Length: 115
Image 1 (cartoon, helix red, strand yellow):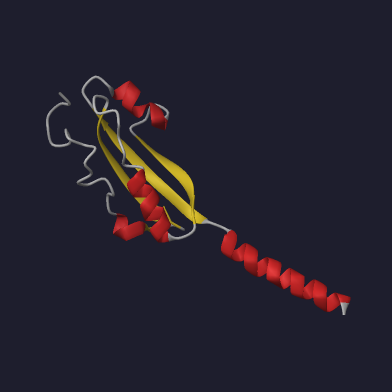
Image 2 (cartoon, rainbow, N blue to C red):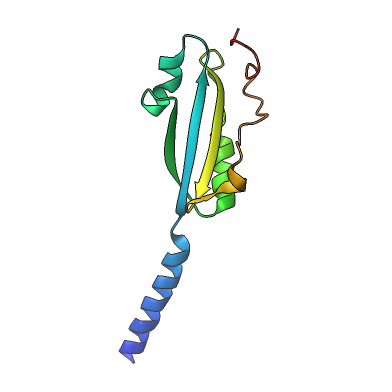
């Protein structure tokens, strides 16, 4: 009887823990700096224009939501534009689309400079 209870407990634990683990959501972020602001704009990627960020997500749709959130920009005079794509468990989310296209935080995206 004790062995059955232990088996049931282990089975329930494995089932519950299997649904609790997040998938592998990786955001690829590329910034376009305002003229002369490359050092500051790229500082969030250790001085590089592009970098990858792994973040926890339970599904591809949650990964997409986090990618959209990552497009926010409050440094209008530093970062002209961002491109954020995502993969979930190695598969491109929404066919590899750029989640920042048309984002309202980039008023200078199509202008030669940020002023």
